[in-house]
Image (cartoon, helix red, strand yellow):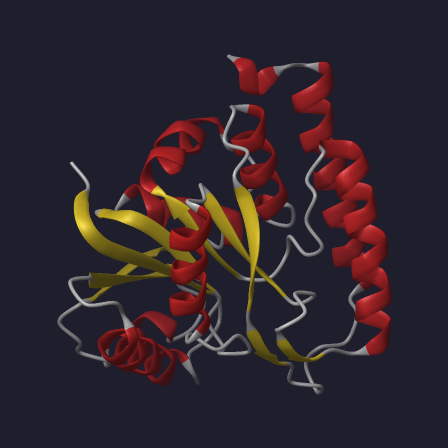
Length: 246
């Protein structure tokens, strides 16, 4: 049974041996100071493949409210997030990318929006008017084009679906988790599209703070192609096969 007034934060980590200990300590400190009164939290770090020393570094954090899960082979961010959600105990379930490009302070802002809108899902959005983002121009243009396509294909009236921070009510995760298939590039779209398809339409955006590392934020065109392919596969399963109705 989920625990009331408990926030579960899933942190997928892939080859983050240099930063993951500090990442977890920063998230823990931020939640400890910033969560609303009466709320507790757990942090579940999912090491997406034992390919380096990320698991060892994560366990060095030695924090009472941090649990580290790991498996041998890299499976993809979507798989890692779902794996963490399967172990989550909270009535609110969030995920936050490792690396701290996205400030964990955004979790509290998204929780506030969840309360204000009585939302099913709050999506951290780089294009929210209050967000603080140093966003490369080409990424901005590509983002606008992609999310226009998402709106046409899935009816999701969101300006940003891909930022690595979101919060879900537990009841939504319980409904959608058994149906999800995407392991890598379009996991966000699948989660949001399936939730909306199952009747959870109170999906809103909230502001976030993002500091891109310009040295590592180059466009990977192969990744963009694979993401487009995964997005098309979600559409095919949703609209043609009606797989998610089963």
